[in-house]
Image 1: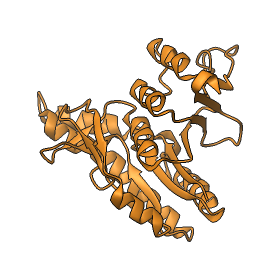
Image 2: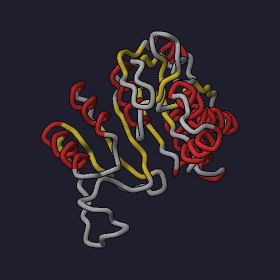
Image 3: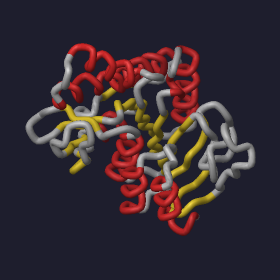
Image 4: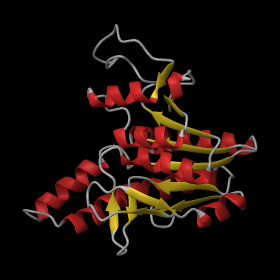
Length: 245
């Protein structure tokens, strides 16, 4: 019985149909006997809309309050997905960053994870629940909600995979892997089957927005093999690991 950590981005959760597609992926894995922890981003353009609301209210929004506001997008995604999984007959529970044990420093808007206290999460997994975690967030030593920067849900997933010693960590995107260029712009772009951590970090530095750089650094440090694949296509994705294996 494998312990799987997986992450779904905002496009993968954009509407009811997408949410139920993701719920189907989760329930299928649970019914095969796996224990599954799913990290989610905010739906669609939710984060941008929340940011716009903040700037409409305040000329210079307080960073603490901005993080409190932005964290709600992922929490909504987690709760909605947990409802959908439960509707499909698999017990499910949603957790925010604090409830999942993610601790951070106090750098609002771009916090770093300092520790993961995974005991509560392990208890839920042990009871057979499909756990849905709000990504992109944690809590600092003063009890403030913090966010991890754009793409921070990737880092949430890798950190949880490391803390739980997961058997696999799959990052689902709206693309079916890592390409040499944006395939929507360059038809000659080629998909990589395998990439080393260092090569992926190089691509991040060149502007690839598929993964947050910090998530790759964390995966390299803990030697966590990442699988980048599509939420919408059942095709082989890109594996990121040591020496591209």
